[in-house]
Length: 149
Image 1 (tube, helix red, strand yellow):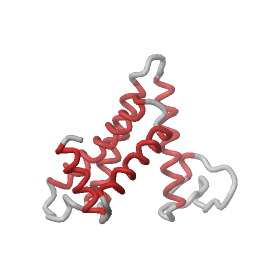
Image 2 (cartoon, rainbow, N blue to C red; image 1 turned 30 degrees about the vertical axis):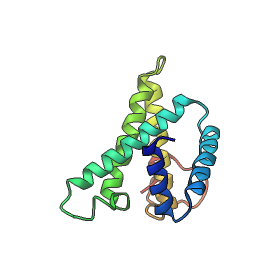
Image 3 (cartoon, one colour; image 1 turned 135 degrees about the horizontal axis):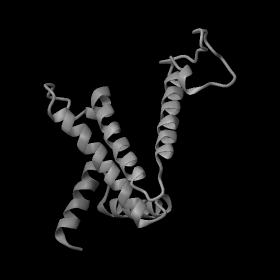
Image 4 (cartoon, rainbow, N blue to C red; image 1 turned 30 degrees about the horizontal axis):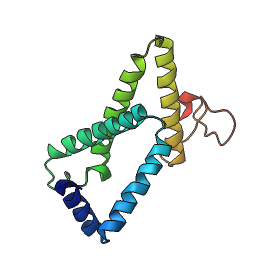
């Protein structure tokens, strides 16, 4: 084992409060989970790139903030988390629209589905309500995209 790898394992083990052997076993076990989770090397790399985009956008926004603690805690800050999320969404949409055979209608459908999903999450979180065209709250039944307020 090369020294930089050994040193990284030792530091991680110390930080987590367990032995170097436990850290090696933990990381090896995690690699098998990753193999099951990511069906191909291409998807694994894509997920890493999206995670990098997320981290880069959020930490960059926080680094430009006046708050000294924002840099360390940006994932708990709505503005920085929103910017990081938007960066990932833009990346995913950019990849989607560049696929062969994707038409404008496909992109409109994707955006409509995203809007509907966001509206549902807002209602579920108690930050919006489903309403009919007259503004009356809907408790059940069919709910359209434009009904969340």
